[in-house]
Length: 355
Ligand SMILES: Cc1cc2nc3c(=O)[nH]c(=O)nc-3n(C[C@H](O)[C@H](O)[C@H](O)COP(=O)(O)OP(=O)(O)OC[C@H]3O[C@@H](n4cnc5c(N)ncnc54)[C@H](O)[C@@H]3O)c2cc1C
Image 1 (spheres, helix red, strand yellow):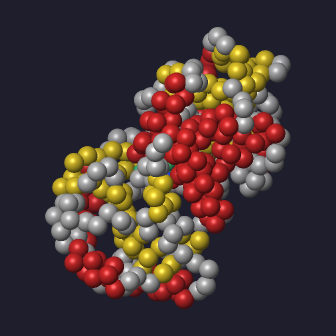
Image 2 (cartoon, rainbow, N blue to C red):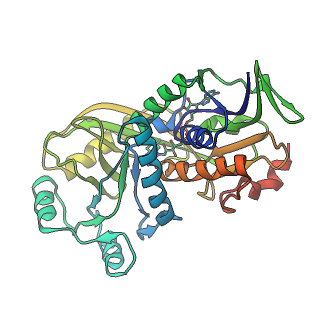
Image 3 (cartoon, rainbow, N blue to C red):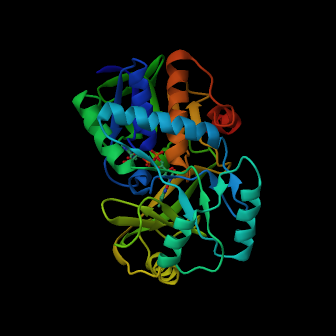
């Protein structure tokens, strides 16, 4: 089989990359093993424009929000589904310091922090215990990542652009103008397979991070699902049907990738303290996020081996970063357009030279 691009991994990164490459008229094949670590499958799908204790505006967020709205909208139109909805975040500060940080941002112009309405205040008072004044983060978005991954896989299968396969790096041969993998010949191979990519010799020196994140799936029958709720590091986001996604954790050191008893107990305790209404835990899962120590992704062509490319290192922001940088990488691969220098993997050319 001869194709332009072989893509490894069909998480949010591989999905959007294959979408934009196909849009550009390229031929692609996506391989996914459909098991193991798959961060996208358990992401809540939030796009939150602010971050941290000082409620800072996140990197490139205005461009990313605008682009996400378009990209999820276009992919949704193609697949006849809706993957993106505006769900503003009602944030309940857990401390006086957090309340002050939110108030300061609210007074500043050009931020995403707003006062809540009387209706929102009265709804929150009925459902939550709290001491400090809530605010609203607007606009924020919720992506239905799981539905997108399933529908896009079906689309690729129909176009004969998808294979269930566990990629074996030892079976890859670099050729003068491309790669050979089993019976596949491609101009380039692009690694979108999350944390697994960092095990391969050409990418192992990248300054990557791996963080564990867990989530509970909970029934909360009496909660208004037009919003996402947040208090400190606890997020409560609408999941499927009447269920809610509760997360998350951000651990750099962990014994294994499995759901832990500690996480479940601590989130149950936080929910008990926060909610006035009953809830019931129905599921619990965990995954490892592929990230970069700079919190900027790894995008582009390997500086030493031009048939290898990467779209990876999305960290906690895959839902907003992956579509935007998938488009940049697709335009770079097909039309030679430039990649944002702060995300271009070329910035690590010195470490990528070391074998
Ligand atoms: C608990 C949790 C909550 C999160 N919530 C959010 C959120 O609300 N908003 C947000 O923006 N981000 C969130 N994230 C981060 C987000 O999930 C990641 O940034 C994003 O999913 C990374 O996507 P990816 O496609 O690069 O990697 P992955 O999703 O890990 O995809 C890698 C794919 O490669 C495949 N693969 C791996 N190895 C092989 C192989 N050898 N052969 C073939 N296929 C292979 C896997 O099957 C998988 O499908 C969350 C993460 C976690 C863990």
